[in-house]
Picture 1 (cartoon, rainbow, N blue to C red):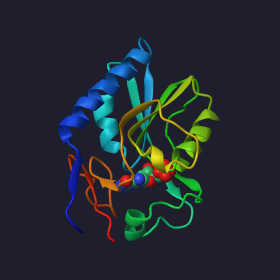
Picture 2 (picture 1 turned 90 degrees about the vertical axis):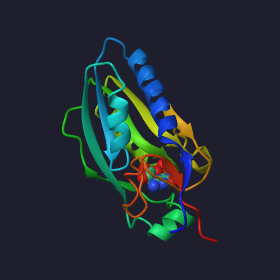
Picture 3 (picture 1 turned 180 degrees about the horizontal axis):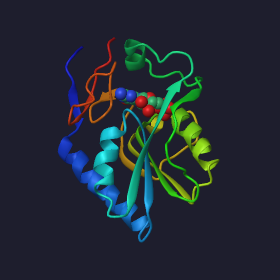
Picture 4 (picture 1 turned 135 degrees about the horizontal axis):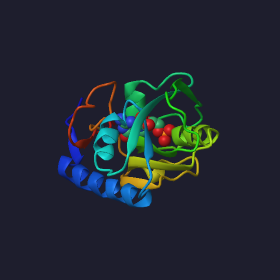
Length: 184
Ligand code: 5GP
């Protein structure tokens, strides 16, 4: 693996997560929130974000994977995910979402396939409100017309790791978000 380059520092992440927490606290002032994180990438972001929201809150987690095979680590890095793939649920939430204020927490919005699937699923549970918070957004890669309500950083089409994001399960524990250089 070639050298990783820091794209977003831990300080920039911490500052932005405080701002996002304040936005959510304002938008849901006086109400309670159910945060639902998408495993595993959003776990670190959810734990920081939720601690910056000054409201009564609960956590839950959901697991998804693409039908067929997740691309090999090399394919994922150099080409990205297949936009034609379908998403399936590998772990459902434990609590009811009906009449709750749901904030779905994702690490990165890329083609939009995962969040489009999850949004439809969540809305079918009739929440009181549904919002999406994503730490990163790669708008240039979008294949489906979905947007997040709270976006940490818009980034170019680079493959990134750290702060929960992996490459072949590694690097999730890096405190900064780093670019993995593509091989060509
Ligand atoms: P989607 O294409 O459905 O919007 O995103 C699917 C998933 O691809 C994300 O949740 C994330 O797990 C993964 N992904 C997309 N871009 C990157 C990236 O730059 N780095 C890493 N580690 N994962 C990514």
